[in-house]
Amino acid sequence: MPLMPVTDSMFLLVETREHPMHVGGLQLFKKPEGAGPDYLSNLRRDLLDSTNMRSLFRRRPSRPVNTAGYLGWSQDANLELDYHFRHSALPQPGRIRELLELTSRWHGTLLDRHRPLWEIHLIEGLADDRFAIYTKIHHALMDGVSALKQLQGTLSEDPDDLDCPPPWGTRQKEPSARNGKAPSSFFRTAGRTFSQLAGVAPAAFKVAGEAFREHTLTLPMQAPKTMLNVPIGGARRFAAQSWSLDRVRQIASAAGVSRNDVVLAMCSGALRDYLIEQSALPDAPMVAMVPVSLRRKTDAGEAAGNNIGALLCNLATDQTDPAQRLTAIHQSMRNGKRLFSELTPLQTMLLSGLNVAQLGISPIPGVVNNTRPPFNIIISNVPGPRKQMYWNGAQLDGVYPASVLLDGQALNITLTSNGDNLDFGITGCRRSVPHLQRILTHLDTALAELEAATR
Image (cartoon, rainbow, N blue to C red; front, top):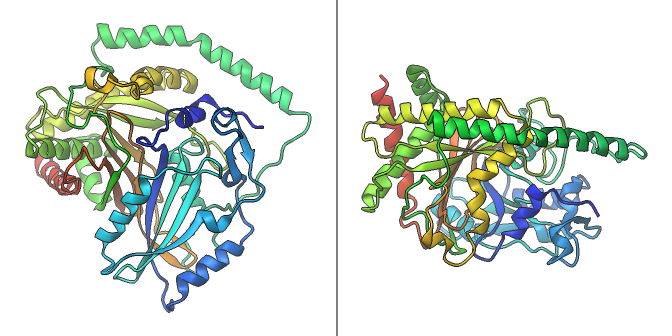
Protein backbone atom coordinates (compact mmCIF):
# COMPACT_ATOMS: atom_id res chain seq x y z
CA MET A 1 0.00 0.00 0.00
CA PRO A 2 1.75 3.22 -1.15
CA LEU A 3 1.57 5.77 1.66
CA MET A 4 0.12 9.23 1.02
CA PRO A 5 2.20 12.32 1.73
CA VAL A 6 0.57 14.53 4.37
CA THR A 7 0.18 17.26 1.73
CA ASP A 8 -2.11 14.89 -0.21
CA SER A 9 -4.01 13.15 2.60
CA MET A 10 -5.07 16.46 4.19
CA PHE A 11 -7.36 17.09 1.20
CA LEU A 12 -9.21 13.86 2.01
CA LEU A 13 -9.30 14.64 5.73
CA VAL A 14 -10.90 18.08 5.35
CA GLU A 15 -13.41 17.08 2.66
CA THR A 16 -17.11 17.20 3.56
CA ARG A 17 -20.32 17.42 1.57
CA GLU A 18 -20.14 21.23 1.78
CA HIS A 19 -16.45 21.28 0.85
CA PRO A 20 -15.62 19.02 -2.13
CA MET A 21 -11.84 18.85 -2.55
CA HIS A 22 -11.43 18.30 -6.27
CA VAL A 23 -9.92 20.55 -8.91
CA GLY A 24 -11.59 20.76 -12.29
CA GLY A 25 -11.28 22.23 -15.72
CA LEU A 26 -13.49 23.02 -18.69
CA GLN A 27 -11.88 22.75 -22.12
CA LEU A 28 -13.53 23.97 -25.33
CA PHE A 29 -12.63 22.44 -28.70
CA LYS A 30 -13.48 23.20 -32.33
CA LYS A 31 -14.38 20.05 -34.23
CA PRO A 32 -12.06 19.21 -37.12
CA GLU A 33 -13.27 19.91 -40.65
CA GLY A 34 -15.57 17.24 -42.00
CA ALA A 35 -16.59 15.94 -38.56
CA GLY A 36 -19.90 14.16 -38.98
CA PRO A 37 -22.85 13.78 -36.59
CA ASP A 38 -21.30 10.65 -35.02
CA TYR A 39 -17.90 12.28 -34.46
CA LEU A 40 -18.11 12.44 -30.64
CA SER A 41 -19.72 9.02 -30.27
CA ASN A 42 -16.97 7.44 -32.36
CA LEU A 43 -14.31 9.42 -30.47
CA ARG A 44 -15.59 8.19 -27.12
CA ARG A 45 -15.76 4.59 -28.35
CA ASP A 46 -12.16 4.73 -29.57
CA LEU A 47 -10.98 6.25 -26.29
CA LEU A 48 -12.77 3.57 -24.25
CA ASP A 49 -10.93 0.94 -26.30
CA SER A 50 -7.55 2.55 -25.61
CA THR A 51 -5.18 0.76 -23.24
CA ASN A 52 -3.15 3.92 -22.61
CA MET A 53 -3.65 4.86 -18.94
CA ARG A 54 -1.39 6.36 -16.31
CA SER A 55 -1.28 4.29 -13.14
CA LEU A 56 -2.26 7.44 -11.25
CA PHE A 57 -5.76 7.13 -12.72
CA ARG A 58 -6.16 3.64 -11.21
CA ARG A 59 -5.35 4.93 -7.74
CA ARG A 60 -8.11 4.92 -5.12
CA PRO A 61 -8.11 5.29 -1.31
CA SER A 62 -7.30 2.05 0.49
CA ARG A 63 -10.13 0.22 2.21
CA PRO A 64 -11.72 0.87 4.59
CA VAL A 65 -11.93 4.33 3.05
CA ASN A 66 -12.72 6.07 6.36
CA THR A 67 -9.50 4.84 8.05
CA ALA A 68 -6.80 3.37 5.81
CA GLY A 69 -8.13 5.52 2.97
CA TYR A 70 -6.65 8.60 4.63
CA LEU A 71 -3.20 7.00 4.77
CA GLY A 72 -2.53 5.08 1.59
CA TRP A 73 -3.51 4.27 -1.98
CA SER A 74 -4.61 1.04 -3.66
CA GLN A 75 -4.57 0.23 -7.39
CA ASP A 76 -7.98 -0.53 -8.88
CA ALA A 77 -7.42 -3.55 -11.11
CA ASN A 78 -11.05 -3.56 -12.34
CA LEU A 79 -11.56 0.09 -13.22
CA GLU A 80 -14.84 0.75 -15.05
CA LEU A 81 -13.70 3.27 -17.60
CA ASP A 82 -17.20 3.96 -18.92
CA TYR A 83 -18.21 5.06 -15.38
CA HIS A 84 -15.41 7.63 -15.22
CA PHE A 85 -15.65 8.79 -18.86
CA ARG A 86 -19.18 9.98 -19.57
CA HIS A 87 -20.94 11.32 -22.66
CA SER A 88 -23.44 14.15 -22.07
CA ALA A 89 -25.43 16.60 -24.17
CA LEU A 90 -26.43 20.20 -23.43
CA PRO A 91 -30.08 21.26 -23.31
CA GLN A 92 -31.12 23.56 -26.15
CA PRO A 93 -30.25 26.16 -27.26
CA GLY A 94 -26.73 24.96 -26.37
CA ARG A 95 -25.25 28.29 -25.37
CA ILE A 96 -22.21 28.83 -23.14
CA ARG A 97 -24.73 29.72 -20.42
CA GLU A 98 -26.10 26.16 -20.45
CA LEU A 99 -22.57 24.73 -20.51
CA LEU A 100 -21.53 26.76 -17.46
CA GLU A 101 -24.70 25.83 -15.57
CA LEU A 102 -24.04 22.14 -16.20
CA THR A 103 -20.40 22.55 -15.16
CA SER A 104 -21.52 24.31 -11.97
CA ARG A 105 -23.69 21.34 -10.99
CA TRP A 106 -21.02 18.73 -11.69
CA HIS A 107 -18.40 20.74 -9.82
CA GLY A 108 -20.49 20.71 -6.64
CA THR A 109 -20.83 16.90 -6.36
CA LEU A 110 -18.42 14.64 -4.45
CA LEU A 111 -16.29 11.98 -6.09
CA ASP A 112 -16.90 8.36 -5.06
CA ARG A 113 -14.10 7.30 -2.71
CA HIS A 114 -14.69 3.62 -3.48
CA ARG A 115 -13.39 4.28 -7.00
CA PRO A 116 -10.43 6.17 -8.46
CA LEU A 117 -11.06 9.83 -7.71
CA TRP A 118 -11.74 11.35 -11.13
CA GLU A 119 -14.45 11.94 -13.74
CA ILE A 120 -14.32 13.21 -17.32
CA HIS A 121 -17.42 14.40 -19.21
CA LEU A 122 -17.48 14.66 -23.00
CA ILE A 123 -20.13 17.26 -23.85
CA GLU A 124 -21.89 17.78 -27.16
CA GLY A 125 -24.68 20.12 -28.23
CA LEU A 126 -22.93 23.50 -28.29
CA ALA A 127 -24.70 25.73 -30.80
CA ASP A 128 -21.50 26.73 -32.66
CA ASP A 129 -20.51 23.10 -33.43
CA ARG A 130 -17.85 23.01 -30.78
CA PHE A 131 -17.63 20.44 -28.02
CA ALA A 132 -16.37 20.56 -24.46
CA ILE A 133 -14.66 18.35 -21.92
CA TYR A 134 -15.14 18.86 -18.20
CA THR A 135 -12.60 17.10 -15.99
CA LYS A 136 -12.47 16.82 -12.23
CA ILE A 137 -9.84 15.05 -10.17
CA HIS A 138 -9.33 14.98 -6.42
CA HIS A 139 -6.77 17.41 -5.02
CA ALA A 140 -5.20 14.45 -3.19
CA LEU A 141 -4.12 13.12 -6.59
CA MET A 142 -3.17 16.36 -8.36
CA ASP A 143 -2.89 20.06 -7.70
CA GLY A 144 -3.75 22.59 -10.40
CA VAL A 145 -0.23 22.65 -11.85
CA SER A 146 -0.20 18.85 -12.12
CA ALA A 147 -3.63 18.82 -13.77
CA LEU A 148 -2.57 21.39 -16.40
CA LYS A 149 0.62 19.46 -17.05
CA GLN A 150 -1.44 16.28 -17.54
CA LEU A 151 -3.67 18.10 -20.04
CA GLN A 152 -0.73 19.51 -21.98
CA GLY A 153 0.83 16.07 -22.15
CA THR A 154 -2.16 14.81 -24.15
CA LEU A 155 -2.20 17.69 -26.67
CA SER A 156 -0.23 18.27 -29.85
CA GLU A 157 0.93 21.31 -31.82
CA ASP A 158 0.15 19.38 -35.01
CA PRO A 159 -3.49 19.57 -36.19
CA ASP A 160 -2.89 16.38 -38.23
CA ASP A 161 -1.78 14.35 -35.21
CA LEU A 162 -4.64 11.89 -34.68
CA ASP A 163 -2.78 9.74 -32.16
CA CYS A 164 -3.06 11.91 -29.04
CA PRO A 165 -3.46 10.06 -25.72
CA PRO A 166 -6.82 10.08 -23.91
CA PRO A 167 -7.16 12.58 -21.04
CA TRP A 168 -6.13 9.84 -18.58
CA GLY A 169 -3.23 8.65 -20.77
CA THR A 170 0.42 9.49 -21.28
CA ARG A 171 3.02 9.90 -24.02
CA GLN A 172 5.72 8.65 -21.68
CA LYS A 173 6.61 5.17 -20.53
CA GLU A 174 5.99 5.07 -16.81
CA PRO A 175 9.03 4.08 -14.74
CA SER A 176 8.96 0.72 -13.01
CA ALA A 177 10.13 0.14 -9.47
CA ARG A 178 13.84 -0.65 -9.19
CA ASN A 179 14.43 -3.47 -6.75
CA GLY A 180 17.16 -2.96 -4.23
CA LYS A 181 17.45 0.78 -4.65
CA ALA A 182 14.46 1.96 -2.63
CA PRO A 183 16.16 1.88 0.80
CA SER A 184 19.09 3.95 -0.47
CA SER A 185 16.68 6.43 -2.05
CA PHE A 186 14.65 6.56 1.18
CA PHE A 187 17.68 7.36 3.36
CA ARG A 188 18.94 9.99 0.93
CA THR A 189 15.51 11.62 0.91
CA ALA A 190 15.25 11.41 4.70
CA GLY A 191 18.69 12.98 5.08
CA ARG A 192 17.75 15.91 2.85
CA THR A 193 14.47 16.30 4.74
CA PHE A 194 16.14 16.44 8.17
CA SER A 195 18.72 18.88 6.83
CA GLN A 196 15.99 21.20 5.57
CA LEU A 197 13.96 20.84 8.76
CA ALA A 198 17.01 21.95 10.75
CA GLY A 199 16.86 25.21 8.85
CA VAL A 200 13.20 25.89 9.66
CA ALA A 201 13.89 27.70 12.95
CA PRO A 202 16.36 30.19 11.40
CA ALA A 203 13.93 30.64 8.51
CA ALA A 204 11.13 31.38 10.98
CA PHE A 205 13.26 34.06 12.66
CA LYS A 206 13.92 35.58 9.25
CA VAL A 207 10.19 35.68 8.48
CA ALA A 208 9.50 37.27 11.86
CA GLY A 209 12.18 39.89 11.24
CA GLU A 210 10.76 40.75 7.82
CA ALA A 211 7.24 40.97 9.18
CA PHE A 212 7.61 42.78 12.46
CA ARG A 213 10.83 44.79 12.17
CA GLU A 214 10.84 45.75 8.52
CA HIS A 215 7.03 45.56 8.01
CA THR A 216 7.47 44.22 4.47
CA LEU A 217 5.32 41.08 4.60
CA THR A 218 1.58 40.61 4.49
CA LEU A 219 0.68 38.36 7.44
CA PRO A 220 -2.25 36.00 8.03
CA MET A 221 -5.16 37.27 10.15
CA GLN A 222 -4.71 40.83 8.82
CA ALA A 223 -7.45 40.47 6.25
CA PRO A 224 -10.77 42.24 6.88
CA LYS A 225 -14.00 40.30 7.24
CA THR A 226 -16.03 40.42 4.01
CA MET A 227 -19.20 38.90 2.56
CA LEU A 228 -16.93 36.33 0.87
CA ASN A 229 -15.58 35.01 4.18
CA VAL A 230 -18.58 33.11 5.47
CA PRO A 231 -19.55 29.44 5.94
CA ILE A 232 -20.29 27.92 2.53
CA GLY A 233 -22.61 25.27 1.15
CA GLY A 234 -21.82 22.50 -1.31
CA ALA A 235 -23.49 23.96 -4.44
CA ARG A 236 -21.30 25.91 -6.85
CA ARG A 237 -21.50 28.53 -9.58
CA PHE A 238 -18.89 28.66 -12.32
CA ALA A 239 -18.14 31.48 -14.77
CA ALA A 240 -15.44 31.72 -17.43
CA GLN A 241 -14.01 34.18 -19.95
CA SER A 242 -10.80 34.87 -21.91
CA TRP A 243 -8.71 38.02 -22.29
CA SER A 244 -5.84 38.82 -24.61
CA LEU A 245 -2.44 38.04 -23.10
CA ASP A 246 -0.95 40.87 -25.18
CA ARG A 247 -3.07 43.46 -23.35
CA VAL A 248 -1.74 42.22 -20.00
CA ARG A 249 1.82 42.08 -21.37
CA GLN A 250 1.68 45.70 -22.56
CA ILE A 251 0.50 46.96 -19.16
CA ALA A 252 3.23 44.98 -17.40
CA SER A 253 5.89 46.42 -19.71
CA ALA A 254 4.66 49.99 -19.33
CA ALA A 255 4.48 49.76 -15.52
CA GLY A 256 7.66 47.74 -15.02
CA VAL A 257 5.88 44.92 -13.18
CA SER A 258 5.19 41.24 -13.82
CA ARG A 259 2.24 39.92 -15.79
CA ASN A 260 1.00 38.20 -12.64
CA ASP A 261 1.03 41.57 -10.85
CA VAL A 262 -1.25 42.91 -13.59
CA VAL A 263 -3.56 39.90 -13.24
CA LEU A 264 -3.77 40.46 -9.48
CA ALA A 265 -4.55 44.15 -10.10
CA MET A 266 -7.32 43.10 -12.53
CA CYS A 267 -8.79 40.89 -9.81
CA SER A 268 -8.38 43.60 -7.20
CA GLY A 269 -10.26 46.14 -9.32
CA ALA A 270 -12.99 43.62 -10.11
CA LEU A 271 -13.42 42.67 -6.44
CA ARG A 272 -13.54 46.33 -5.43
CA ASP A 273 -16.27 47.13 -7.99
CA TYR A 274 -18.22 43.95 -7.21
CA LEU A 275 -18.24 44.63 -3.46
CA ILE A 276 -19.17 48.29 -4.00
CA GLU A 277 -22.08 47.00 -6.09
CA GLN A 278 -23.08 44.79 -3.15
CA SER A 279 -22.55 47.68 -0.63
CA ALA A 280 -19.95 45.46 1.06
CA LEU A 281 -16.48 46.91 0.37
CA PRO A 282 -14.35 46.83 3.56
CA ASP A 283 -12.32 49.87 4.60
CA ALA A 284 -9.13 47.82 5.01
CA PRO A 285 -7.36 46.32 1.97
CA MET A 286 -8.31 42.76 1.05
CA VAL A 287 -5.66 40.04 1.09
CA ALA A 288 -5.24 37.26 -1.49
CA MET A 289 -3.52 33.93 -1.01
CA VAL A 290 -1.45 33.33 -4.14
CA PRO A 291 -0.33 29.70 -4.61
CA VAL A 292 3.25 29.35 -5.84
CA SER A 293 4.47 26.13 -7.45
CA LEU A 294 7.58 24.74 -5.75
CA ARG A 295 8.35 22.36 -8.59
CA ARG A 296 11.63 23.06 -10.28
CA LYS A 297 11.54 23.79 -14.00
CA THR A 298 14.06 21.00 -14.44
CA ASP A 299 11.78 18.39 -12.86
CA ALA A 300 11.30 15.62 -15.38
CA GLY A 301 8.33 13.38 -15.96
CA GLU A 302 4.65 13.88 -15.36
CA ALA A 303 3.55 15.80 -12.31
CA ALA A 304 1.32 14.39 -9.61
CA GLY A 305 0.49 15.14 -5.99
CA ASN A 306 0.83 18.55 -4.35
CA ASN A 307 3.90 20.76 -4.16
CA ILE A 308 2.83 24.36 -3.61
CA GLY A 309 3.64 27.27 -1.33
CA ALA A 310 1.37 30.13 -0.30
CA LEU A 311 2.15 33.84 -0.57
CA LEU A 312 -0.13 36.48 0.90
CA CYS A 313 -0.64 39.58 -1.24
CA ASN A 314 -2.07 42.97 -0.27
CA LEU A 315 -4.70 43.67 -2.96
CA ALA A 316 -4.95 47.36 -2.05
CA THR A 317 -8.71 47.38 -2.60
CA ASP A 318 -8.87 50.49 -0.39
CA GLN A 319 -7.09 52.46 -3.14
CA THR A 320 -9.31 54.22 -5.69
CA ASP A 321 -6.54 54.72 -8.24
CA PRO A 322 -5.75 51.61 -10.37
CA ALA A 323 -2.10 52.62 -10.82
CA GLN A 324 -1.63 52.90 -7.04
CA ARG A 325 -3.26 49.49 -6.57
CA LEU A 326 -0.87 47.97 -9.11
CA THR A 327 2.14 49.52 -7.35
CA ALA A 328 1.07 48.21 -3.94
CA ILE A 329 0.43 44.71 -5.34
CA HIS A 330 3.83 44.67 -7.08
CA GLN A 331 5.60 45.66 -3.85
CA SER A 332 3.74 43.08 -1.78
CA MET A 333 4.48 40.23 -4.21
CA ARG A 334 8.13 41.25 -4.63
CA ASN A 335 8.74 41.11 -0.88
CA GLY A 336 7.12 37.70 -0.56
CA LYS A 337 8.97 36.20 -3.54
CA ARG A 338 12.28 37.54 -2.29
CA LEU A 339 11.82 35.76 1.02
CA PHE A 340 10.72 32.50 -0.65
CA SER A 341 13.79 32.58 -2.91
CA GLU A 342 16.03 32.37 0.17
CA LEU A 343 14.31 29.25 1.57
CA THR A 344 14.39 25.59 0.56
CA PRO A 345 11.17 24.11 -0.90
CA LEU A 346 10.44 22.20 2.31
CA GLN A 347 10.99 25.28 4.48
CA THR A 348 8.77 27.25 2.13
CA MET A 349 5.99 24.65 2.41
CA LEU A 350 6.20 24.57 6.20
CA LEU A 351 6.19 28.34 6.53
CA SER A 352 3.40 28.58 3.94
CA GLY A 353 1.41 26.45 6.36
CA LEU A 354 1.36 29.42 8.73
CA ASN A 355 -0.54 31.38 6.07
CA VAL A 356 -3.25 28.74 5.73
CA ALA A 357 -3.22 27.08 9.17
CA GLN A 358 -6.63 28.42 10.18
CA LEU A 359 -8.25 26.66 7.24
CA GLY A 360 -7.61 23.33 8.97
CA ILE A 361 -9.94 24.29 11.82
CA SER A 362 -12.46 26.24 9.75
CA PRO A 363 -14.97 23.32 9.66
CA ILE A 364 -15.31 23.54 13.46
CA PRO A 365 -18.65 25.25 14.20
CA GLY A 366 -18.25 28.92 15.01
CA VAL A 367 -14.68 29.36 13.78
CA VAL A 368 -15.50 31.11 10.50
CA ASN A 369 -18.15 33.37 12.00
CA ASN A 370 -16.11 34.39 15.04
CA THR A 371 -12.56 34.84 13.73
CA ARG A 372 -10.91 37.01 11.12
CA PRO A 373 -10.08 35.21 7.89
CA PRO A 374 -6.41 34.37 7.22
CA PHE A 375 -7.02 35.91 3.77
CA ASN A 376 -10.05 36.91 1.70
CA ILE A 377 -9.65 34.98 -1.56
CA ILE A 378 -7.38 32.58 -3.43
CA ILE A 379 -6.11 33.88 -6.78
CA SER A 380 -4.06 31.36 -8.73
CA ASN A 381 -2.22 31.77 -12.05
CA VAL A 382 -1.30 28.36 -13.48
CA PRO A 383 1.02 28.03 -16.51
CA GLY A 384 -0.76 26.56 -19.52
CA PRO A 385 -0.07 25.92 -23.21
CA ARG A 386 2.02 28.63 -24.89
CA LYS A 387 1.04 27.75 -28.46
CA GLN A 388 -2.10 26.78 -30.32
CA MET A 389 -2.77 23.16 -29.39
CA TYR A 390 -4.87 20.34 -30.84
CA TRP A 391 -6.31 17.08 -29.57
CA ASN A 392 -6.82 14.41 -32.20
CA GLY A 393 -7.40 17.11 -34.82
CA ALA A 394 -9.73 19.25 -32.70
CA GLN A 395 -8.47 22.78 -31.99
CA LEU A 396 -8.21 23.74 -28.32
CA ASP A 397 -10.28 26.90 -27.96
CA GLY A 398 -10.34 27.50 -24.19
CA VAL A 399 -8.97 26.13 -20.88
CA TYR A 400 -10.97 27.31 -17.88
CA PRO A 401 -9.89 26.08 -14.43
CA ALA A 402 -12.55 25.26 -11.82
CA SER A 403 -11.00 25.21 -8.39
CA VAL A 404 -11.60 24.29 -4.75
CA LEU A 405 -13.55 26.42 -2.27
CA LEU A 406 -12.74 26.29 1.43
CA ASP A 407 -14.96 27.10 4.38
CA GLY A 408 -14.82 30.84 4.92
CA GLN A 409 -13.58 31.29 1.33
CA ALA A 410 -16.65 31.57 -0.90
CA LEU A 411 -14.84 32.71 -4.07
CA ASN A 412 -11.83 31.49 -6.04
CA ILE A 413 -10.27 32.98 -9.18
CA THR A 414 -7.94 30.72 -11.17
CA LEU A 415 -6.55 31.43 -14.61
CA THR A 416 -4.18 29.86 -17.07
CA SER A 417 -2.33 30.93 -20.19
CA ASN A 418 -3.60 29.43 -23.43
CA GLY A 419 -1.68 30.51 -26.50
CA ASP A 420 -2.43 34.22 -26.99
CA ASN A 421 -5.08 34.34 -24.25
CA LEU A 422 -5.50 34.22 -20.51
CA ASP A 423 -8.44 31.98 -19.63
CA PHE A 424 -10.16 32.80 -16.32
CA GLY A 425 -12.33 30.38 -14.34
CA ILE A 426 -14.28 31.78 -11.38
CA THR A 427 -15.73 29.38 -8.83
CA GLY A 428 -18.15 30.59 -6.16
CA CYS A 429 -20.48 29.30 -3.48
CA ARG A 430 -23.95 29.36 -5.05
CA ARG A 431 -25.55 30.63 -1.84
CA SER A 432 -22.96 33.22 -0.77
CA VAL A 433 -21.86 34.93 -4.01
CA PRO A 434 -24.84 36.51 -5.81
CA HIS A 435 -24.60 37.37 -9.52
CA LEU A 436 -21.20 35.69 -9.88
CA GLN A 437 -21.07 36.42 -13.61
CA ARG A 438 -20.89 40.16 -12.82
CA ILE A 439 -17.28 39.62 -11.75
CA LEU A 440 -16.43 38.91 -15.41
CA THR A 441 -17.76 42.36 -16.37
CA HIS A 442 -15.74 43.96 -13.59
CA LEU A 443 -12.57 42.13 -14.69
CA ASP A 444 -12.99 43.62 -18.15
CA THR A 445 -13.50 47.10 -16.67
CA ALA A 446 -10.44 46.71 -14.41
CA LEU A 447 -8.24 45.72 -17.36
CA ALA A 448 -9.38 48.77 -19.36
CA GLU A 449 -8.68 51.05 -16.36
CA LEU A 450 -5.15 49.64 -16.02
CA GLU A 451 -4.55 50.25 -19.71
CA ALA A 452 -5.65 53.87 -19.36
CA ALA A 453 -3.57 54.35 -16.20
CA THR A 454 -0.33 53.10 -17.77
CA ARG A 455 -0.47 54.86 -21.15
